Length: 338
Image (cartoon, rainbow, N blue to C red; front, side, top):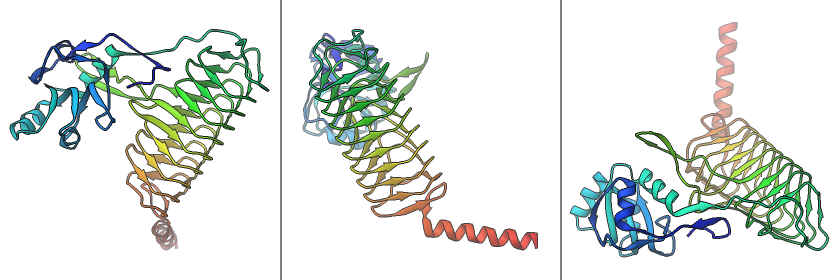
């Protein structure tokens, strides 16, 4: 269920109406049952929830679980239901389950965006807050905060004790731990980059998650950290992030990582503890990076990496292999020029 501090959940929708909105066809289940929210298939409770399954593995995760409505591709619906797959909820077949899920999610949930201008009257103890800051009255502020000029703190945001938020920062849909420092111009909690094709063009997939930043993190100037699509984008305790870094939705970064400037991390990456990334590193989506990995500046990563590896190049490879290739190319160039 989307966090009510950041999202309003609208009136429930019947299965019949949801399937019609998604452009699907009922296969099984009670079309009069009511649906309250959208969810990821791995959430703890899926009662009255809408989910979609992109492949057979997702459908298997629903085996013997109670849910409200599952949207399946036409091919998957035909294959799995013919096999007698065990389901405990309504099933609809649809040409694009992700598009249907996006349409239903947009109907059931709305982001809370409104902030009241000016200083709050109930400032926390020891706070030093610039008079131009805009802080929502529903934000939860810790003691000893320092908030600079023209900062915007959105509804429901939590700032832990001793946080420093420098000029021009905007924070929304986020829970931020103690003694975190966010440098000028950073953008935390904006909607992630998620779209799906439709007959009328690209449709935005609702971004219904949060950003969770654990304590003692530093985030550089003009860095952007997108909120999750359904789950959370997480930055682990003690991690340091340089200027001009992009972190996509649902990415999870471990503790005490160091990420240098102009690095771009696509959505849904899982990064372990103590990972070091040089400047201008690029990661494609859905990668898993083990603990202690080191990635040289300018590298492009397109595969999962086990713990402890050192990588360089684009596409990235073990440093020894990359250095050997560079040395070989240099020898060939000398021979050609000689």
